[in-house]
Length: 90
Image 1 (tube, rainbow, N blue to C red):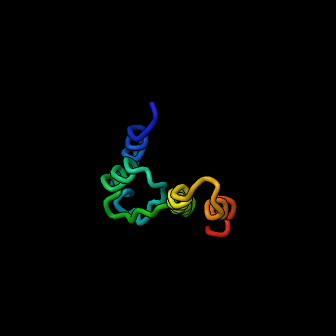
Image 2: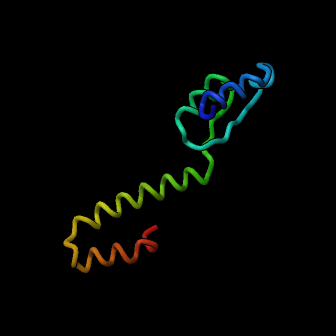
Image 3: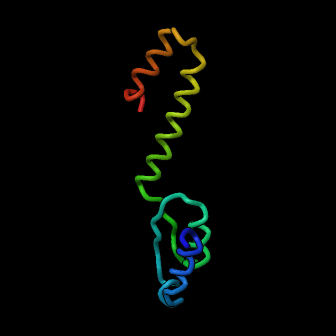
């Protein structure tokens, strides 16, 4: 059995005295992990790791770029410029 339940059971195996002294937890942005961390490490600060944060921002940027790009007719110069030069925008 994997997932959040496994992670929660694992963290419960760490004594309370140690868990309450944890200052920082670094993880991805998976919401269920955040709720487990908040419950089991109440004195910690949750930090999103740089890789996942950067990926989230880049994916959001690409989504907006594609929405703008698709507003132009398929054979327009504007659409081709946005589509072919996306690396210049990021």
